[in-house]
Amino acid sequence: MQNKMERISIKDAKNKIGETVKLAGWVDVRRDHGKLIFVDLRDASAKVQMVVTPDKKEIHKTVETIRPEWVIEIEGKVNKRPEKMINLDLLLGEIEIEVEKINILNSAKTPPFEIETDGYDVDEEIRLKYRYLDLRRERLQKNLRVRHEAIKFIRDYLSSQNFIEVETPLLTKSTPEGARDFVVPSRLQPGKFYALPQAPQQYKQLLMASGIEKYFQIAKCLRDEDTRGDRQPEFTQLDLEMSFVEKEDILKLNEQLIIDLVKKIMPSKKIQAMPFPRLSYKEAMEKYDTDRPDLRDNKNDSDMLAFCWIIDFPMFKKTDKGEWTFTHNPFSASRKEDQQKLLNKKDIDKIIAEQYDLILNGFEIGGGSIRNHQSKLLKSTLEIIGLSDKNIKENFNHMLEAFEYGAPPHGGIAFGIDRFIAILQNEPNIREVIAFPKTGDARDLMMSAPSEISKEQLKELGLEIKKKK
Ligand code: ASP
Image (cartoon, rainbow, N blue to C red; front, side, top):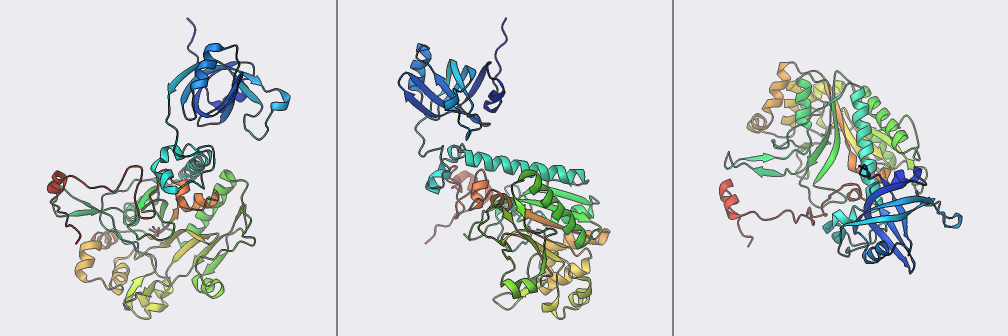
């Protein structure tokens, strides 16, 4: 019995000149030249031109009916294209497939927009509603692939340095990162709510108290922010924490990770300065009037990456109401020389945090700090920002207590993966590198989320919706 022919990826047809292969994918475009019909076939790996000659009557008839985005399977011979038809702009521009068998796997309605373009000019609401079609675009396929490669690189790199990836819960309790929490009602504990994590901050610190020493996670973070610039209510961070380290260790490790990643994944990019320049918050504000300076010498060079670290941030700032709040993260430690100020709650405006941000081409792509690993220091911070004893007990007791059972000194950082990939891919916004992003006002147009829930669900949860007046 003859073996069933195995499907190969279109890109592998390149090395099969003279052989018969089986391919499957989507019809990209069909060009009908009367006698000859050309069809571009596309799969996840590449595109190839197929040709149907008039002597293959049955196939010719079938191919006349097929339209863009139909799903087909074919068998055909891989031929070298005639010299004058070679197109070196295409990956497979030197070959074409002479179709010998065709099988239609599914038909397709006419898509609401063109797929073979880059899609920038298509109304974004329509792109997001039909995201599964939008993602068929070569540009977006590439973005998701680069994103995968970057994340794989990070996982391999950190694993080789003895980090382990640990998953932390999504159903948890509020952890302040300066935004609002998304909350989830509890059915089993009526009237109570989980908060979705704004970041795995407390868990990663508790993992240090657990003796893990080197943790990372490709983590989803959820923040219920007002529509503000290019933000998403859920986004992905590389979240990382280490024990027995100082600021210098964390900066060094992460700088090398980024440099190696860019060299491996994006060899066409140039890093303007290595080691990355470091500026204190004060210097940055004085010189550039921003703590996210764009240091590129030539801002029109789309391959230029100008990183810089901003360090020595003030630990606290005043709110509009004149109260103290943390500038970055309530868990950050002060510089050693400012510890007494923190404990005595004196000269609060002069306390400098062991906090660092990584800026790339004017965007903040990462930030982190050395943490307070002693209860009294964390408690003092929480008191300075005006939390009552009751509030501290209810919300932070687990941290204060954990630090009393031998927590090692520790610190960490988190990188915004979406922003970093968007910059590497020269994309104007992070939605272009997220498979299923939400609109600026946090709707998923494809799934129609958020949506109402049934009366029964509300009752089970002990919730009632008040009509807006
Ligand atoms: N939790 C911080 C953030 O999400 C990062 C860190 O301090 O590690 O921005």
